[in-house]
Length: 253
Ligand code: NAP
Image (cartoon, rainbow, N blue to C red):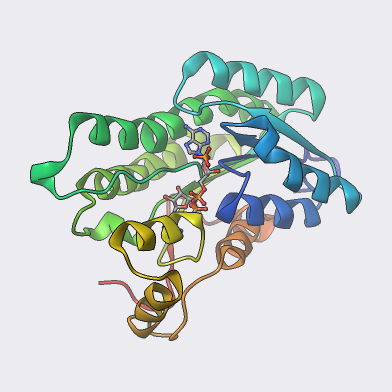
């Protein structure tokens, strides 16, 4: 990215967790940040924090799985912040259950947010990246893409995102746009806290168990992922495309 390159980054599901850490980090890197989440009020703290530090940020409410709100969000971001050339598809939900108990709604909800959401957002911003002859798309996959008990919906969606990423890389590469996926391991966030609660295990204990299972003997924090996003959207990463980087504290099997 040069000084004259457009510098607007869109991050979905950025009101909290990995998305908020990424918003904070890319703002420090000099991007104007569109913070997309379901609830505009929930985006206010991170937007206020970025503005207080001298950056530019905009809160935008949109359900990434709904076509018209996505189109309206990208239109508003383009008008108020500038044409987006970085997209981080981070919004996500869990609806865990064993296959025999999983409802069609659990399946559809997870597919909608992760896969349909990433598709709609990428389709809505790609023309700005192509026009700029520069762009970066980062999709949040997961180690669950390799298979995880109770997550047949989530693991299928996260594996799907890896194929989606490779195809984006092939189609958009000629226009100076790279697409990569990050597959985190256990990251301390409200998502993993909710899993601990659902399993009836205190969060601290749940994290200790996860750390013991991780080569570096700690769980991840949202900044571990944000730092990787920061690298992937930089010019140093311009020859890396279609890859999945596992940010998981060790080799994944
Ligand atoms: P999180 O704390 O649950 O944050 C997810 C955010 O996405 C929430 O603010 C949520 O809003 C928002 N969101 C949900 N559905 C949305 C929709 N349809 N449209 C717009 N926003 C929506 O999760 P996280 O732990 O930061 O995870 C972020 C991403 O990393 C997810 O894709 C997740 O699958 C992936 N990941 C996480 C881990 C981990 O260990 N934490 C590991 C691997 C991958 P509401 O609060 O309103 O629902």
